[in-house]
Length: 74
Image (tube, rainbow, N blue to C red; front, top):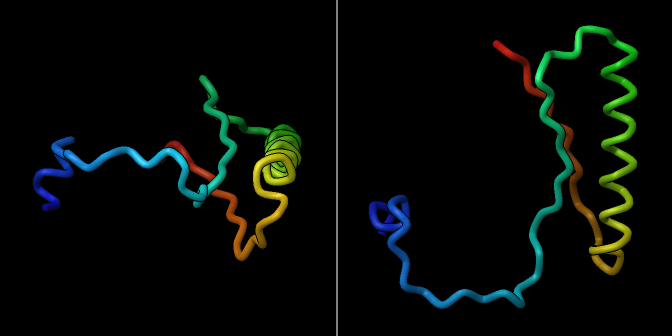
């Protein structure tokens, strides 16, 4: 089954009405951020954006975990 799913071969019907399992907010930069204050400012803005999205789209659900993922060039 994984062989077919990994190649986009899936005949199951789309179920658009199911409960959302995740929300995320992210940014991709053309150049790495090298200044701590710039990183902190972007981080805080992303947190605010994510909290606003949670309030809008999942206010009636309890949140069990919230993650922040940071990627480095290496």
